[in-house]
Image (cartoon, rainbow, N blue to C red; front, side, top):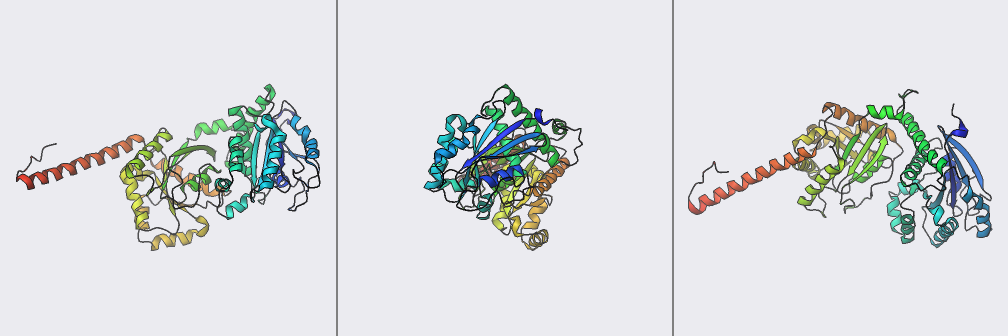
Length: 472
């Protein structure tokens, strides 16, 4: 049994405008209805309230506060009520959560945000994160948080001021679903360790950060891997589970970046439904899923109008260098319901760029999984002119993913299991940069031979002289 007094303890203070969703966010973090929360214009929280929860040994205290811009209360009175929260236990980390609703970011919202920023001051802003509420509405409207922020320079400036420390919360979800709360805590702990930015980081506070990170990592291992025995530590598991490096490929606009975000479990790649490419440079993100260390690499889209073929090949070469050591799985992304001759030509292009060795490392992923079930997909494959042969070349490895349901981790676990099976079949070997260089050298040699044949043909026509076919 955990000794609560010796366990790491974190203090999370919720601040923001009246009606932004502070109380609901506090309840989501606590996993229970601790704070009174309802949608109304009148402030529900009149005084500072607190709740406490233990995440498998990590103690977290959450403080709900009266909302700023309450017409019935002066801002000075609200600040006075919250003043003690700026001076909590020096030996325990305190993080401030600035809660902003993803309704329209009007002058009122900006004014409330400015009041919170002024109240915290530069010292405490170093330990402040933005929580964007109503994530469910963004998702239903197919709008990413990055798209939402594009409409407000003020909001972009605030996010930049906080070094991009933000997370989207859906407070309508089941309170027993701890995923988003655990993700927030993990981000807070990891960043505080790497940047040493938690408030009042004294000697004891630093120990809390490191211990807290271990606690959450161990909890994540148990949560994702039910077979783990009580005596097994996360480090023991990681020694036995090899990391996986995944490269995303596909046409512009099919959902590569969104698929990457679903796998990672957070919004890290910029993603939007647009005919113009959003991703023009390869980028890599790392995480831990199902006890596996994952590196996911997003790439520019095939047929991208912003990149010619030469630069596209160069960029794909760069993506392999980002992987460092090779790629375990190429996920070739297609949009469900749209598979024409151009889509079928994608596989030929992939083989042209990466060589025939790549076929052993490809899994086809269909996005828009919310629009189909397994039977519907199999019927669609059977009745499509091009799909059966494409899948056959890839060993009939394919998976369906629903990027609108990020909380569905089962679909990610199934995909990772498919990758593991494929890696085992390949003897644990990766696709390497040397394989790509070999493929491009073969294509270059073929091109030289074609040019030489054309030159010989031209000489014969012009001079009637037949060149020596053994010439290089």
